[in-house]
Image (cartoon, rainbow, N blue to C red; front, side, top):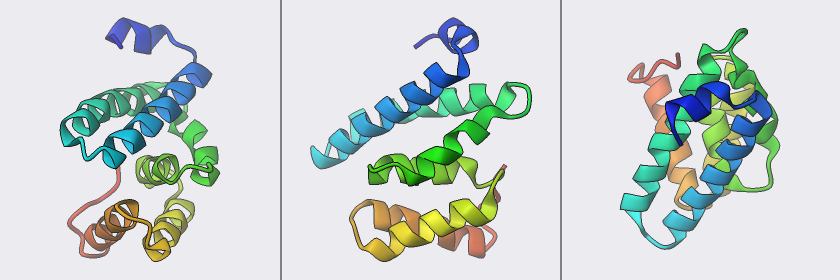
Length: 123
């Protein structure tokens, strides 16, 4: 995935790529493959950065993914939309935390703790 691909891809394609990458992250988690998970994260971050740069901050297009059937997609979408829809994204993170489904419940809980303690401010 190159910068040229990101800048020329239509927003719906970037959202589809985001979902596909989150599903790959889920697979990496299930395989305990941290290296692969982290490598995929770089691509997820690049997509989110590109969406943020687009007119009107197209990260908004990730909001419907907060209701996706896959917990990793929901988690990542909520994390990446906290600055745009803090109440909705926080509610998703709270539901994931309270689900007890590991490791995403821990990730969501740590994100909420960091926000509440002022360690992390969504941007």
